[in-house]
Image (cartoon, one colour):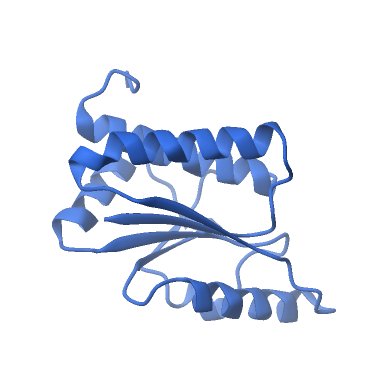
Length: 160
C-alpha cells in the first residue's frame, strides 16, 4: 500500500526537512516486507488568495489534483479523531488488509484544510489538541508512520 504525505507549504532546507525525510525513508525501508510502500511526499505552494476561505478552497483543489484517484484520504485537522500509536498502526493494517492501494495523508496550510477536501476524507485525524507549526506536524506524522510500521513488524522501536 502506497503512503503519501501531501502538504501545503514547503519545508526549508535544514533539520526539519532532514528529519522528516529520515522518518519517511525509515518507514519505506521497514514497510517493504509488510506491504507498505513506496512512501512519497508532495509539497504544494501556499495560495495567495486574499481571504482564508478562498485560500483553503484553492489549496484543497490543488491537493485533490495531486492525490491519485482511489487513495484512502486522511486529512489532518485539529477537530479530527485522535488515535494512539497502536490504534493508528491497526488502522493502517486494516486499510492494507482491506485492499487499499494507497493512503494519502493531507496537511493544510496556515489556514487549515478547506471543506472540499475535508468532505472527501475517509478519516479526519488530529495529532493532538495543541497547535503545531506546519513543519513539526509533518515531522510528527512521518514519525508516527514509521512507528506504526515498526509496531506492525514487532520491532523494538516502539516499546509501548
